[in-house]
Image 1 (cartoon, helix red, strand yellow):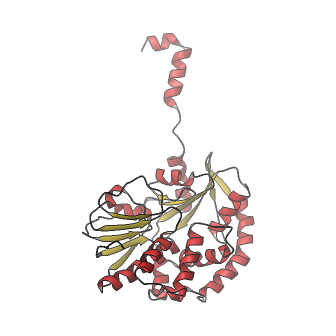
Image 2 (tube, rainbow, N blue to C red; image 1 turned 135 degrees about the horizontal axis):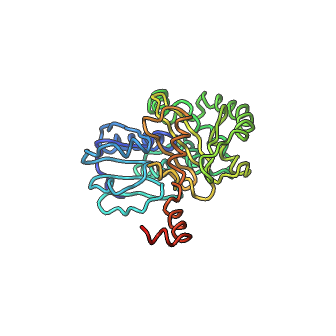
Image 3 (cartoon, rainbow, N blue to C red; image 1 turned 30 degrees about the vertical axis):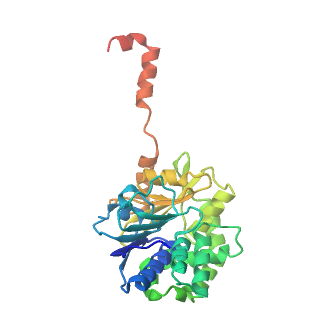
Length: 313
């Protein structure tokens, strides 16, 4: 069993259930090991990359391992694709498992486990890896939707940091009804409201329903000509979040162009603060994701066609 450093802070991903479960599990593990509860911080990818790393010791979960995290007395637990090798930090990394499952395995080694946590981590793993063939997939998506609908910190306050309270929570009844009623309506409407961002990227407008479910179905049914689909979400503070989905690994490539990250087929990014609404976001994305006109190639072509012009330069 590897000895773990005592963390000054625990940092996790703010936008999904995997980040919530991971962060709270590690917070509980720290209390068990060291008798103190380190503060928990949660970030979207863009804000995380702007955060100063001043702590001498930290635990990081569900955030991509990168060179700046390779620090002595830092523990990083993650499942996103990375090319960075750990030389100083302790890295627990497996792309086939969710961050919550990796954190729970660490907890289990130290005796922290229960049937309720077994169930919750299992559902979080199914939802985050989008295991659509799993018999509990629909239920797992309803659990994941809790964070999408009610927000990371609101949900954390509602359960008082006690993850077990999420099992069979009354709000899941709301999620089940929303899925049954809203998803078919939302899919039918969104199918007719896909706007081109670039030749390979389409913006899916949504009015009701689970956006992840709608986009997944659009891709699965080849309902649009675009291999990459994106949706937009405006947070309460005005920040615009872009979510990208694909089936061939291109989503992460697009997200990285926007200074974001994630998985090959499920990624996201935070847009600049100057982008405050959907029309502005669409305009910004078109500017960023369309290649500039090939001016140089056109000049060379003209020079080839008119050699006298080239000689006179």
